[in-house]
Image (cartoon, rainbow, N blue to C red; front, top):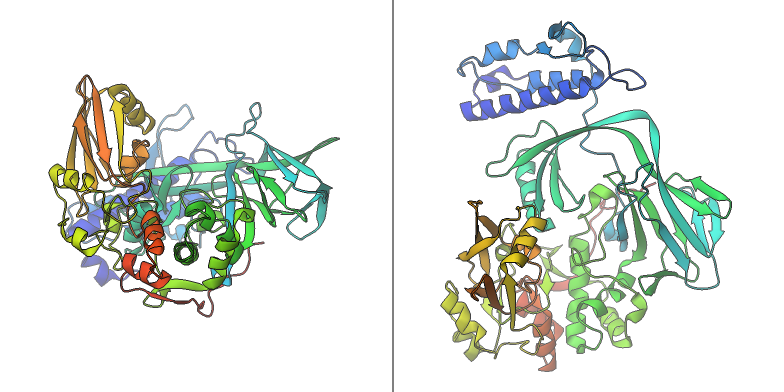
Length: 596
């Protein structure tokens, strides 16, 4: 039941926002209902309100709770059940009377996407890590997506099993193609979408704003990061939203290509590799899983213990030859980050990716004895803030000054990272923060006495021509007008560029790149700690320092400090002041059932 008093006391702006959302949802319901409603999903010659439309109309009537003080609002709502729109019949526009009392029957909420089961909790120390995603995407009847081939690393064959563990195929090579298969019953989905965003962190902040309003918002990664909310989600101030609706009538399925032809398989599928599986020049032990995602494609992932995962991360992130204390610091951070970020791909039923959007994961066999010793020496240890694993971001080199989290991503501040000149006390005091001007940054770049100064990108320069800039902007969907000027609009306390404006010819609107979108667009820039000057004749020179976002631990700095005799505890406290190093214990009830 409505609370009539609460409805009449709503502020006018809130009421208008609800009315707009109600009309948007109703319009969406009409468009989907008009596509056809019979069992075979043919387009009907006239409008018949289906179950989905009834849900939409009821949602509109209930969600548009507005005060009578809003002019015309009540009359507008009363008119909602009378729908007039063009139909295929020759008679043109007709009115369909819908009896509101009949709409009080229960209805299923319209999903935002096809459902994928959650993975088991990462707090059980088992991770599901994606090796290859969006498999089968773009498959058409006459143009299949690239095949997937899995090869045993030894003499023992790979074993392909169904979801129940039944052996389907045993072979030293498994080759899958893709085909579209009609669904017995179509699925209507509808959502509001924010994005794309350059990073999960930026997307998560927008999702958090929706969640504060009681909206079930989820971060998705169909190509770039996006935020998905239900079709009736309210607007967000300063955020561009688009409405998406579709009827899913078929799905992509894997086809095992055997010597006698192809066999279409139902997922998820398990692959066991007694001798390991060859993958990108290395060998992974598995087991492996091939499962559908939320976008109509598939993901190949490895299921592996957390400590073995670290063997595939630590040497590829910091280098197997680093000093012991640096390797131990990296092991603690990689373990902490994995646990704190295991929700990144919940929408698709796994925990983490294996590239730079997460932590680089590859062949664990490349872990040297010193790497394995560092992992054992810190076994189960994480960095904690208020008893929970921190968002343990790190990077290759900070160029002499570390950054705040909000200088890299559109996110809330992290209380355990700070902007500081990263060097010995006397040197740090000679670099007063904040670095607000190009002259301040230039003074820093002229000084090479910081920790980690031996990194190859501690100082760097990059030249961009107008043509290269135009190509980069076009790839980011900003059009191909040639740039004419470049201006740094804002810097953070560490001197990093927060907003970069690029003016363009032919009256094209200037482009303003912010935060992580700067490097995601201008991909040749190692960091956002730079000054930019005209190089003449349509070229610009970027002079900068560091490699990566600059937040948290600098791997080059940690290697330098470990070589100076610093312990792992001291290194971690230097880059994450106020945190505690200790064992992580999962809370009771944190482990959902394993996905079927």
